[in-house]
Length: 146
Image (cartoon, rainbow, N blue to C red; front, side, top):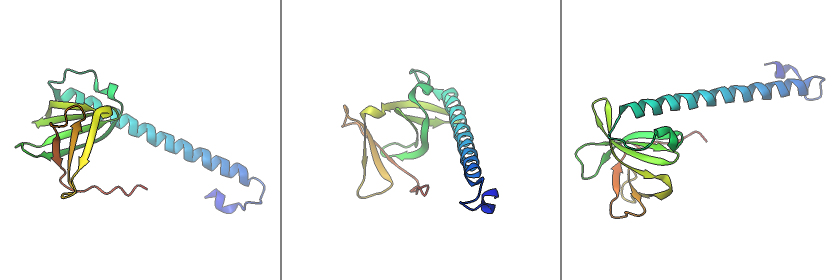
């Protein structure tokens, strides 16, 4: 609001602009830290609800990027997928809990989308191409953040 009362040629304009830039940066940083904290809390919650997981603490796989529930072809139950920076975790919901089914490291993960169905895709470990996990999303998600 203060910047509206200053012209670019007036004394103090640069100081006001620098203050606005600093405040904007601080606000962005606070929002980013809040988001990271919320994700860390969610990862701890997932870890506490995960059954049969023998791997290390989930925090070792980086931040939680996405999570969602998908219908799996050739399976009667849906699967909940958790995408971390370094791993895709595939689970089955059982009440409040998630039962570990498998995981694929992101460095060995292949993703194939379907030309016939935009909601259908397969995640595959590149060393086990004959064992795809073909899942179908419930709806398309459009990212309008850009």
